[in-house]
Length: 247
Image (cartoon, rainbow, N blue to C red; front, side, top):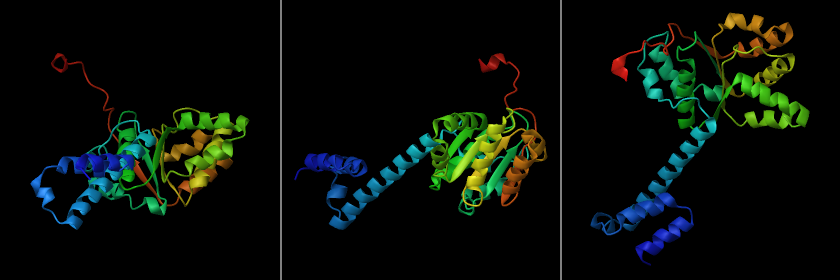
């Protein structure tokens, strides 16, 4: 069977990595002289790497992260309260199987969402399905499902994510239904799945913000165990004077 037929057959079987590598190897004496097992191994490794790359791309797209983030950049930063040694450990994501929670707080523009995206990217690279939401958007969409009768089903969908990122917590006031929904989300994940909560409010202000003693106590109690708090400081990174040299 000729090369082009083998390549076509591999593509028909959805072996794109195998097919592309075989196509590149065609006519190259270095590969034609390889032992059969070694040659097949090189093609299978190429297919495995292509599938891993495609899976990573799909998971990153599904996560809907707010920014494209490189975890490696986070390790090298030592400012605004970031501790590189601790960040390095967090980016290993060994805490996710233990269902730890991460709280990230700081003034607007200090890089909270970017840090959460760095951690989520590292988690995805480690094979943990992750999903980003703005808290207000998620609570609003789940509130709409209460009328449709699919609320429980939508909550169950969140459980497929090993890591859930809830951004802008404390920015928009919640009504009573949204407070109950937030509790349901935290309760569903407590002790089994990890959550990153991002917001400007310091942790000791959460109880007053939730403004429902029963729900606030319940939420804070479930977040009180196995959590790590990243407290950022400094002025907004978005602030910059106009400069003609930047035009």
